[in-house]
Amino acid sequence: MKKHKFQQIRITVNSPGESLRLTAQTDKQYARLRGIYVSLPQESLIAGTMLGLKVNNQEVFEDLHEVKLLTSGNQVAPNQKFFLFEEQLDAGGSAIEGRLTDGAALETVPGDLAPEGYPYEAKIYLWLSNEN
Image 1 (tube, rainbow, N blue to C red):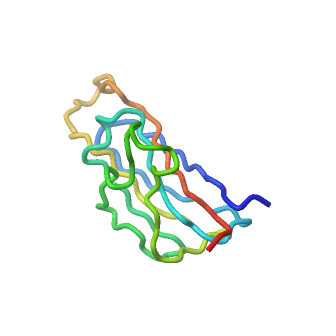
Image 2 (tube, rainbow, N blue to C red):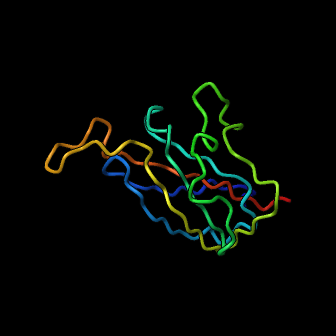
């Protein structure tokens, strides 16, 4: 069995300022949640975007945790992009819950076309491991 897996959670954001609930379950074959990385399709979407996260009802990040602290640009090597958890977080089929809130200001008028860049897909990568 492989020692590591990068599990992906995808969330479609349709409009500026949208707040979306997310639920998932970690792969049962991996014991530990080692880290997290959030990928947004454009750097301009990072500012103001928030992520809240719970693992098995244990709060990891409050709903107001800035995504810019959990992401990195292309200048960072792929194996250094993840925010690593210092504490032991169990994976093994753990329930993942959270909320992603888009950081754009709400400046659209009902009936207007979606602003440039919307809709987009946010990707949350969970680094699962069987190592201590």
